[in-house]
Image (cartoon, rainbow, N blue to C red; front, top):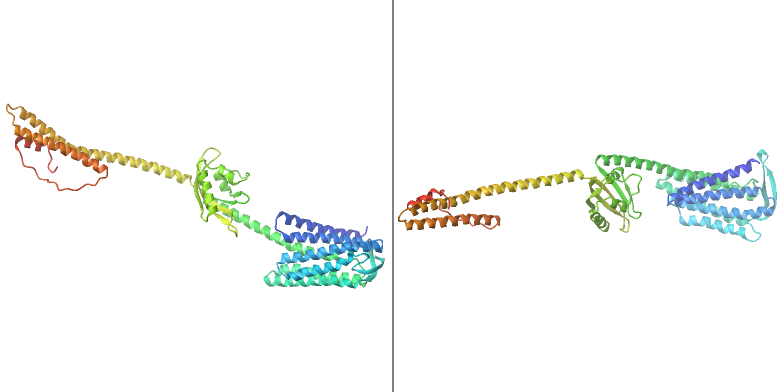
Length: 481
C-alpha cells in the first residue's frame, strides 16, 4: 500500500462526511436547499475521487477508456450542483449563465457515450506507468487529444463567469465575507482544476487527475460558510432562549402566563406559569382538546364561542372562565389573545396571555354579599322608619276617635242625652276614620309610585262646638288635617 492508495480514499471519506452532515441538517430542518445541493456536490466529489483512483489503477487502454464516461457523468453533476448551490446560497447571479455552463458541459460530455469515442482522446494509444515520491506508481494515458473537448472547457469558463458575477453582486449587497470565501475559493479551484486537466490531456503534464483534491477546497469553503450560519443560528437560539427566560421571569413576576396555539398542528406552547395555572405538568403535551378538558364544564361553550369569533373576525379573544384543578379546587382565569393570519387571511397562530383572577373574583363575591347585607339593613331601617311614621300618622285620628267615643258614653249617661251633640260626635268619628283611611291610602300610593298632588291644608285650630268639640280637640294635635 502506498500514499496514493491512502490519499484518494481519504479525500472521498472527507467529502462523504461533509455531505452526510449537511444532508442530515438539510433533511431535518427544511427548507435547506443550499445544504442539500452541498451534499450532492460533496457526494459527487467523493465519486470523482474514486474515478481518479480507478484511472490510476487501470490495467489497459480499454479499461481506461471504459472508466472515462463515468468521470464525465460525475463531473457534470459536480458542475451542475455547484452552479445551483451558488445560485441558491448567494441569491444572486445571472440565471442564463448558471444554465449555460452546465449545459455546454453536458453537450460536450455526451460525446463519451458514443460507440468507441471519448471527449478526452480521439485515440488512446497506451498507458504509461509513472513513479512518484515514496515509490508510489500510477498510470497515465497516452494518445491523441480530442479538440472538441474545448466545449467542456467553454462550459467551465461560463460557470466561472457566473460565479464571478454572482460574487460581485453579493459583495455589492454587503455579503463580502461570503463572496470572498466561497466565490474566491470556487474561482481559484475552477481555474486550477481546469488548467491542470488541460495540461494532462495535452500531454504537457503527466500526473493523476486532481479534480477531487481541488474540489475538496471548495467543499471546505462552502462548509465553513454553512457552518457559520449554523453557529449564528445557535447563537440566535441561545439569545432567544435567554429572552424567553427573561420574559418568563417578568411575566411570572406579573402573574401572567403566555401561550401560543399553532392552529394547523393543534399544538399549544405554554410557559411554566401557564401550565401551573391550569394544573398541567410540563411533560404533558398540550392541545386544544386538552385545554378544554381543564375548564369547568359550564364555561366550555363560552370559551369555544369566543375562540370561533376571534378566528372568524379580527376581534381579540377576551374571556373569563373557571378551571377545575386536579385537586378539585376552582380557579378563575382571565384570558386575552389575538389570531395571526397568513397572506391569504387564514388564521395560523393565536397568541395570548392568561391571568389568575381568583382573588379578584372572591373580592367581588364578598362585595356582593356585603352589598346584599347593606341593602337588607337599609330595607329593615326603612321599614322601621315607615312603621314609626305610620304609627304617628294613625295615632292622631285613632286617638280622636277614642276621645269622641268616651265623650259619647258620657253623654249617653244623662237622663236626656243631647242628641245633637251625639250626632256631632258621630260625625267627628266618621271624619277621623276617613282621615285614617286617607293616611293608609296615601302610603299605598307612595309605595306604588303614584303621583302625589300637593294641596293646601288649614293648620289653624277649628272653632269649638260644646263639650263634644272640646273632647275631640283634646285628642287631636294642632296642624293635622
